[in-house]
Length: 191
Image 1: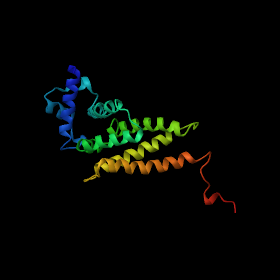
Image 2: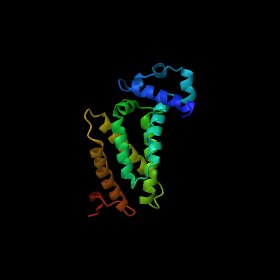
Image 3: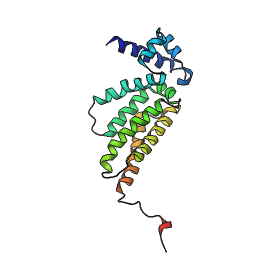
């Protein structure tokens, strides 16, 4: 491992240790540096801010790992994601409590939107604007994920991923079954 990666991993471990007992908004870059015996200059050489470090942790621990796996389908990846968040739930409970620019929530929303956009391009062939649908699903998924992780005794990851699958595939199928217009409502009946 290069010196740069050793430094990044040391900073990441320090942040993970700090987030076991406090929320991200209560942790400063100074706290992170002090916890691993580095100076702020080292931190800022590698990361823009603490949010960038949180996003790097997620990327290196999950995205890089999942990229090397060959999933049968998207739901297998969702199961891996739920397992990962569950295994690291104390860290992510505290990281996800902080909202705003560069937050983990924003980063996850972008990642999920890209995934849903790619999936929906196949399901909604010819649809001129898939992004609003993808953003809707990304927001719903992120909201459910946060609610699940922030529960005191959250259900096991397999149960949660099955819950997500039932919720999302039902709506997904309904949307995909529309032809050019949604079914008419009783108000559309001229009689």
